[in-house]
Image: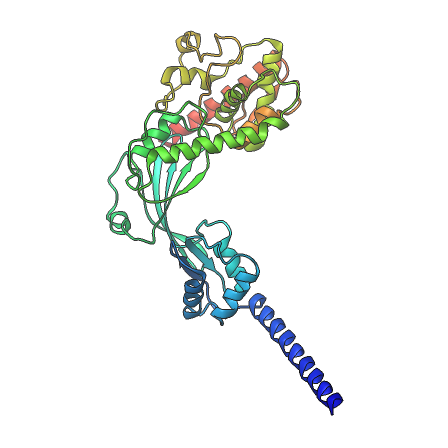
Length: 389
């Protein structure tokens, strides 16, 4: 009798274990398998939201089949407490695991309506755009320069939308004065920016911000990020550089930034200036002369005069030896990397080639020939412009 009872108990236990194993396997499959969405949606996670509330909302929107499995899976992965506020694009058939990853990873919104304040060298542009989840494409809502025109009504009407996201994007080569002046005109920011940060210390990048954040706080973020970039790249620098401090490397990086708009040219342009420093030659770069005239407060808007090339300022590298005393703009990561690891070359000169890039030379004679070709291209371009008027 006891043997029969034990045998039956064992049979029941095995069946129960098998059922549990099957249930777990089914749950895992539900968690990682294709979800029920047939079209993409933009799902918002509010600040202070809980995983339970998010799971319920996702089920109501038809993005998941089971809020319970969603919560258990998030907890099993150790992500239940990692919710990030924001708006997230959830694609058709996205699994629960994929959704959990999206809403717990970086916190950077991937959909919804966004205001991107883009600060460039020549102007600043406020761009409001909205992502269509179905096409995964942004549609422009409004665009204007706050320094030159009033905000369009479509922008004003939607500025109070609680779901609106904000971003400040800083272009490479912008001066610190330009950044501060542009931030003063951003109507979604608050507070005075304070003193203009030292030139070169703001990292060109895109910064997601909260409406009403202090302008000084954004500048602090930019400064911190540039410090991080320098700290990361400085230990891997070339051994034989003619400058010995991160500050001097930042000066060189800013010159490289202003001399070429072609990314792949940066290490070669840096090599020219490094070679000149090694040879004891003056750098003779126009952007430094321009900075000496403007102090970074705006764009010169014309060509340099011969008297200006001969005029003495601390930044006129046609007159002074070595590097100028400060950077002449805020260089991006790639220009800093080029200044720290310039290409190996024998070039001492370069001039524009008419295509947006430059042609390089080892000797002055070669350089003069290249300059003559460039002058001919300039004359031809001017003639074409006059003919078209």
